[in-house]
Image 1 (tube, each protein chain N blue to C red):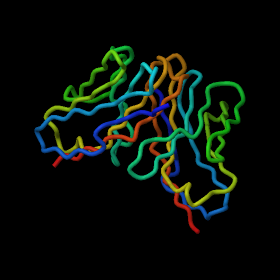
Image 2: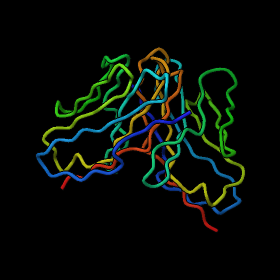
Image 3: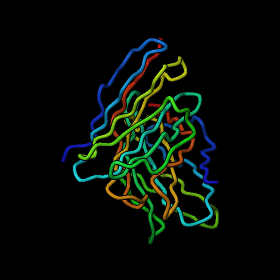
Image 4: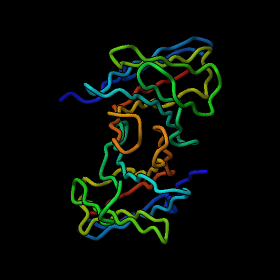
Length: 114
Length: 114
């Protein structure tokens, strides 16, 4: 069965510091992978997605993620965090060839210290 | 182009009542899927509609139902509301029938059952 693990429930970083949010997935075939961000009381905004090709994916707001098939990981990174990045981040997977059913991780809540 | 529109944004209902939520997808998108988000269970898939047909259903009781109209707009209905149905309900719009076309989420409907 498909699953997504985000091992860090809560992370605090200082403004200007680098960030890496971890995501591991379990899926027997080639997955489509996504990172979404959610501000309090809001919907989900797509940061980036991996479908195929280059394993380093660039997204909006200066985020990037790297797909590592050997580690079943899709970690999200940002070189310098801004206070406005404080939000909850969700990693999600859907199977190639499967119907639309996103499987989400439990999320990582990011706090940014001034 | 307009994004995904969910109405209403907020709802307060009493136990035992029923509720209908609406989702208008991005123009040209034929797939609409629904998710429930709660602090305890996270983001869980409810069901997906494509061209007016339900193609996939999550593990929710029969009190949760939905439909899709010929213009791709979708509604979900929850009957005999329980306190545990209090959640943020999100819908996602997708162009085609598979994960590769990506998903755009609406801002959600916050349902409170008292």
